[in-house]
Amino acid sequence: MTGLAALIEQRRCMLAHACGIQRVLIDVVTAMRVLIFVVFALVAQSCARNPILAEPPPACTSAQRLYVVGQGWHTGIVVKHHDLVELVPSLAADLPVSEHLEIGWGDEAFYQAEHGTFALALRALFQSTSSALKVVPFTGKPAEHFPQSETVELCADESAYRAVVSFVASSFRRDPDEDVVRLGRNPYGSGWFYRAEGVFTMRNTCNTWVAKALGQAGYPISASAVRAEELLSEVRALPR
Image (cartoon, rainbow, N blue to C red):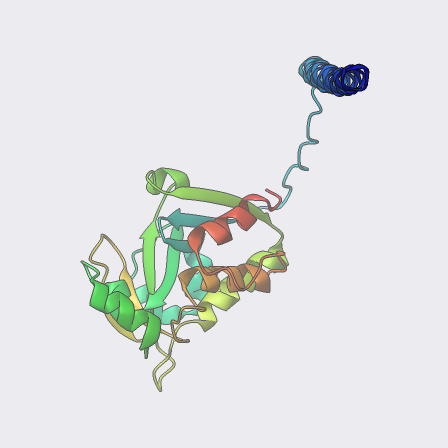
């Protein structure tokens, strides 16, 4: 019995030792949690008392502005009416004198359709053979003209602005007389559709076209921006 009692006592001590270690570990974990909470609270309090304010961007001193308009899945770009018509004179016959022109690019069939269908969308993605530019004249602030859209205003120096206008002008397909090729009226409001250079694909969309226009001006924009949100997230980060 003495040997058995000794064995029981030994096991009891081992169990007590293990339980003690477990209690110590629990106490350590609890203390760590409390410490983390206290540190987090102090940091949060410090941030609340002494917020780090981002340095505001320098004020735009240029007389030129560019605008990117986000309309759901689509984006377009806004330039001055006079400046684009100066490079593409044949537009003057269709577009009344206005302050601005909003231009977008897309698959010719899908872009002009009043009601886009699944079949037209598939054709645009995989079998597009021609593209179109939509040109909408308007006067006033772009954000007020497109109240349901996101409009991002960009500060542009003269050379950057002219580079964008030149890119837009070069996107019009011309006939043998160097005139634009009119396709039809804009079914959504004022403006016209014109045949454009380039072919719409999954990797070359309306948003890619805007990205390329901004890239011509030297803005650090990825030319692979396929979706509108991809492009807008980059545009929002640009100096304004």
